[in-house]
Image (tube, rainbow, N blue to C red; front, side, top):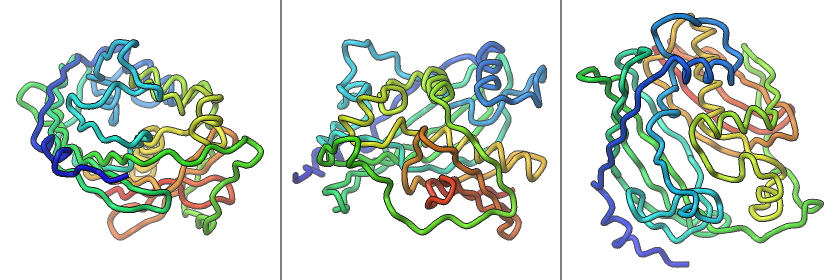
Length: 281
């Protein structure tokens, strides 16, 4: 398939505005999803909560076959069927507080394409500024990747991608990605993407081994891990997805010192790096 980049780049500069109040109820649900007991009762809201706010309230009838809202409004109408969050970078400036009304100002910054192992890839870079009144809380660069549908495989034919086993971190923690955890995070973020909760679709239509662990869920776990190790949340946090994780096996959060910061990564037990991240203070 040949992408009409000139047409897609007409979306560069397009902006979107969304606002939502941080409620104590949302904070409680976020903390419950991640089994967090620290910080409860404080007026500060947890980091990474902004991904649970301001989601587009698309009508169910307007969702595509994969559960995503139809394209062509804010995001460009990339004619590739598979859409994933490839990575991002967050630069924190102020802390969110319960009761704040967060405003997200989003803008399309770049549309690029290249040829991958499975065919054409299209990358869309989005910049988000998160504000609470006149306080800017953070700036986020989000990288979205679109790809072609791979040839459908029967479940018995699906095998994990072979890769170099991830190293052991100086710090490590085991995570069990239950279907309840994935469903709760999808609900928190109003994410209808069916690969995270609809096993027959994930396995039989998109060819995955199981339910896919969300990229931002992994990023949140790694950012929380960095905060616990260092004693305070990072000022800069960048992450990049390299391979998928599924709900069929436990995975590890890993971290090791890297200068004044931390290098972090997730991986299946005995598997390759799934997401890599960098936290700096």
